Amino acid sequence: MAELRAVLFDMGDTIVDLGEGRGSYEERLRLRVGSVVDALLDRGVPIADRHEFCESLAVDSEAQYHAALAQQLSIDITVVMRRFLDARGLPTGDDLVEAAAEAYCRGGPNLTAPLRTGALETLASLKARGLLLGAISNTIQPGRFLSTNLQRWGLSGFFDIRVYSSDVGVAKPHPRIFQVALEQLGVPAESAVYVGDRLVPDVGGPQAVGMKAVLIRVDHRAENHPSLVPDAIIDELPQLLEVLPRLFGAANQAN
Image 1: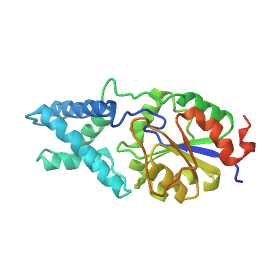
Image 2 (image 1 turned 180 degrees about the vertical axis):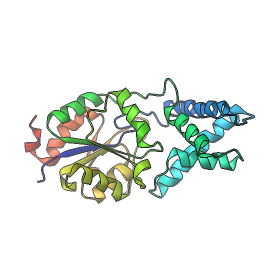
Image 3 (image 1 turned 45 degrees about the vertical axis):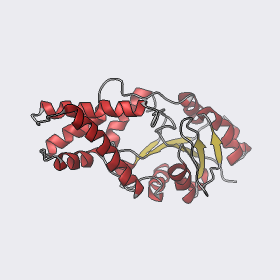
């Protein structure tokens, strides 16, 4: 049995409680697009109906993102903004697009989602066992903005590597995004496990490259698939500390 050397995590609804489909994610999205409107108005862009613009941008940004994910491709917010502004006949100069993208990513107050139960304690325990930790996440935001979020959550010191779809050109479950992370860690697939909340990207993806995969449940959203079976299922992150020794052998129980 391979020795466990690295634990890699999804971020949204795995480490962080996004609340997607429960209302809190959607509220933060409205705050984000509101910040974009403010940035555009400050630069003289004419917006006749603030509410309509915000609703349209919220819907369009999510649609562009999920369309890219369906093809296992990355997309970042600058591309989304340029397409959206162009479709409305608004200016698309580089400075303006960058300002809109930055406003979306930085947002405003009350945008920091809470961590899932036991996240910090679990990461600290895994780190104390000498394991390498990494994050692999599908996201519309460039990594430079996500680093700020990690600092807000107190997570910056835990992850040895961070791999984001927006930076690497492909999205989970594409094998390349997992291979990039493994290469950066210098760890073979059989010595790594991935933890995430969705079956196709977070179980099918890592298993396809030879990693083990643990599914963490999200209370308000059931995951079903006719053929994908996680190596383990947990309800909250602290249970990972009990699951990993069973997946990789008793030798991995040492602190």
